[in-house]
Length: 264
Image (tube, rainbow, N blue to C red; front, side, top):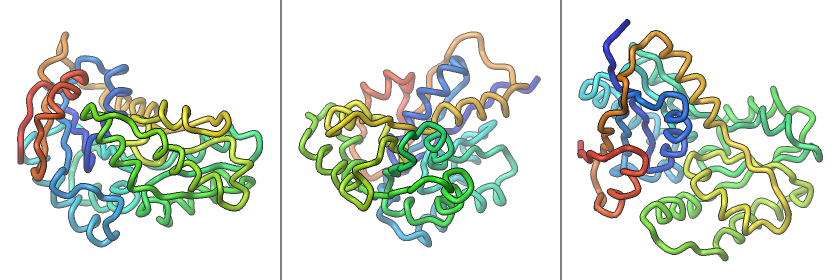
C-alpha cells in the first residue's frame, strides 16, 4: 500500500468543485489539492493553441510541488484540448473531463440533445467524435457561454443571482434549429453544475441536465483503489495561480473541505 499522496483536482477556476463534490462522496478522506489557474482564467475564451501551451506546463509545475497520486483535469476545455499532451508529459494517472453526451443520448426521449459549454469546448473535434459515436441517432445542438462561467464564479463568491441572465443563456441554446425539441442538456463545463438549480428555474419547460462528474469520481476511485487513505479527512488545500483576491472564496472553499489557501 502506498502512502497517501494527494489527489490534485485542476480547473481554470472554481468549476472543478462540482467534480470534487462527487469525489468526496466516494473518497471522503483522500487528501485533496484543488488547483485553480486564476491567472489564466477563463480558458473558454482562449484559443486552442493557448490552452495547449499553458496546461501541460502548469500541471508539470503543480505535480512537482504537490507530488499527487493522480490528477483530475476538472475542466472540459482543458481536457478536450490538452489531455493527450498532459498524459504524454506526466508519468502518473490523469483523469479527464469530457461532455456527457453518451448518458444524455441514453436519457433523451425526443432524440434532440443540447450541449451547453464554453465556446472553446463546443467546437472541438473530440465533441464531434462523442456525438458521432454515442448520439448518432440524435440531433446535437451546441451553444457556448462565457457568461455562465462568470455567473458560477459569482455564485460561489456569494453574489446575488441574475435570473434574467440564466434565461437569456438558455434561450441561446433552445432557440437554435430544433431547439424547441431539446429535452436533455449536457452541462459541458464543470462550472455549470454549480448553477444547475438556477438553470432549471429559468428553463421555459422541464429539462434534464446531465454532467459526467459522478463518472469522473468513479474513475478516480478505481484508479486509486490500491492506495491507503487516512482514517479521517485532513486539511484540504486550495491553490490559486494568482490574479484574483481569494478572500471572497475562503468561506465557500471551506465548505468543500479546502481550509488552506496557497498561491503559486
